[in-house]
Structure formats: structure tokens, C-alpha cells
Image (cartoon, rainbow, N blue to C red; front, side, top):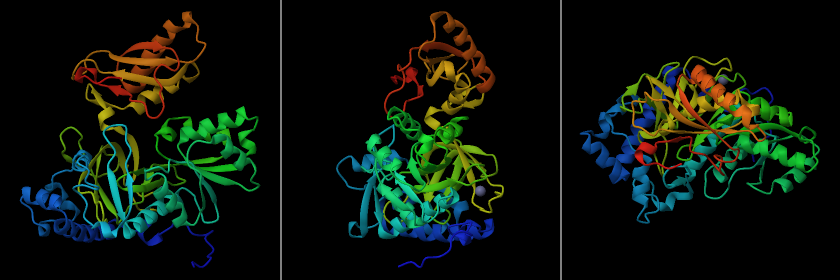
Length: 451
Ligand SMILES: [Zn+2]
């Protein structure tokens, strides 16, 4: 039994790690990386072959600075190795006798991959998540409804366990059954929180109104959000907070690494909570060249596990492009922070400038009452993109015919001003683009991709 302690004054979940000076952090990372590489070389023919092919022995890797000598790994390599029915595939390093949980990663592209966790991996997952949640303002004694998918994906059970690790009273509600959820919520006298996607919070407010309930009259005061870029879209956080009278905080994780990062009250990027468990590099997504990990730098993030038993990663390309911030944060945490810019697959380059769907969405939201915010880009000719980019945009319901021409011109001007490219705009009826789940924003039809 853990003793009840007064936590009201505690600013961090794990003060020693979260305020570690950079040099001490690097020593910790170097030491753990050396042990991890030796373990992988010993237990995985795949990792051994990778190092051998690069002419490396484990002893050649003395620290994080030596990582660029090792070739990248791709999630598709793991997926391919599971395709014949192999449970965990090439990066399995612990025997099945030590693996106590198997989850899958989701994703809009490619098939899910299966990930194993040992008891120690689960403990580490909880520790990382608790750091992130503490930064986001979650505390023991708080009641949290977890409204994520518990089937298969780590966002359900494993993320649930991070709330329990922290000490929150966590209700495993799952997805769907919104009316039953609202009935339960509105029956509670004291305030509580929710762990969900931001778009679910918006939809839940609509369902509440449909039931004749005022969302602000329900005790939902804190939102821990993940799974979508929603809160980064200007105005979206305010919209969610306003709808419920709540504080909304952003969180980030990946199926392979776990829930690892959360936003502090300074709201200046998401703090990486995986210090001591994984290290990150930034690369140019086109050339694979390593970029300096310095304040303000943008690049694709590459992860390496430094304390993982079952399914470790060694220079795994995430295909997520981020901007990192390494200057100290006012909250006192010394960990680097980041902002997710988008998937490198969704990024396209116009006249040397990287364009991400999130930037287009942000620009379109400025015309929000007249547009739904849904859109799709169709690159119908190969790069270089020196042509007006075909951009299909949904109009809001009830926009009259005679307004549409002017609206199309406004979209072109807005996008040119905000995102720096010329769009060839087609307006379509509401509901044409948005489907269930995540919508593909950029289609490369010159490569045969279909919307
Ligand atoms: Zn901070």
C-alpha cells in the first residue's frame, strides 16, 4: 500500500528526472543506450545483422552521438516480419515467457503491428505517462473517464494504466454509448476529467445539447486530449474549453513508444516525458541526413529505445515531422519540448517551403462559418510543384449559389497569404470529404493514390 502523501505542493511527478541538467541527462542516456545495444545484439538476429551490415560491433556505440552510424529501421520491416503469422517479428528481444501484454499500433497507412510488453516495460510505460499527465495538471484524487478505444490499441488499456500509476481514479468507459456516458456524468456531484480525442469532446457536447443538457452544467472540468492535432488548430482549444467550461491539455504518444509527452501550463510545446526510456533524433525526411537537435529545428523524429525489453526500437523512423524546443521552460522541466507539424507523407514542398495539412486547415478555419474546415489536396503532377495546387474545400450548409464564387476567391487569397501557395480551389457540398476516422488530406494521384 502506498502511503497517502500531500501532493498539493509537488510540481513534478519525478523531480529528479524531470529537472535533470542536460549534461547529466546525456550521461544517463549514453549509459542506457550502451546496455540496450548490447542486449539487442545478444537477443535479436535482426539487430545483430543490422549492426554487422554496417560494420559495427556493440562496443562501437559509446553513446547517443554514435547513433547515426546505425541504419534506420522502418515500421514496415516489423509489419513484414509479422505477415507470416509470427507473433512479434524481428524486433522481439525478450522471450514470450517474459511478455505479459500484447497490443497493436493503429495508423491510417499500412497494417497494424503487434507490440509486446514485459512487466518492466509496462512499469516504464506508466512512469512516462505519469510524468506527462502530471505536467498536464492531473493529480491523485482526480476522477477521470477514459473514453478511448480499449480494443487492441495502446491508447486504451496501457494508457489507462498511466492514469492509475499517477493515482487518478480512472473509469474505463471506452468509446461509444455517449448518452449513457452523459447520464453517468450528469449524475455526479463533484468535478471530473476526461481522456479522449478533442473531436469527441466537441461531439459529446452536441449529444448533451440534443439530450436537453447544458454541457457547462455537467462537472467536466479537465480534458486530457490525444490522438488528433485538434488542439493545435487555432481556436479549437478555446472551442472545447468554452463548450464545457473546462481546461484542455494536449498529450502525445505513439503506439510503439507509449503515452510519453504532455503539455504544461506554460503552453509552449509538449514536454517529452520519455527521458531515460527513449532518445530522439531529427532528420531531413527526404535525404535522411541528421539535423542538429537545437531550439526551433524542424525535422522528422527518429526514436531509439534505451530501456525496453520486449519490442525495442533502434532508430525507427516515425515519419512525424516536428519542431523541437530546447530552451528551458518556465515550469522548471528541463526536457525538450515539441510541436507536431504533421506526417512527412502528408507534407509537400512548394518553392522550397514545407506545407502541412494542419497549416491549410488553420488557414481555412479563418473562414469557418462559411466552410466546414474539411479539405483535400490532390497533387496530380509530380514535383516540383510549380502549378496551382488542386484544393477541394467543403462549404458549410446553406451557402447560396451566388456566394460561392466570391468564397472560392477568398479561399485562394487566404491560403496564398497564410500558407504561401496558389490553390486551384473547388468548393464541394458539406459531407463530401469527411468520413469516419482520419481523413487523408494529401493525395498524390500522380502516383496512382486515390482519395
Ligand atoms: Zn513546461
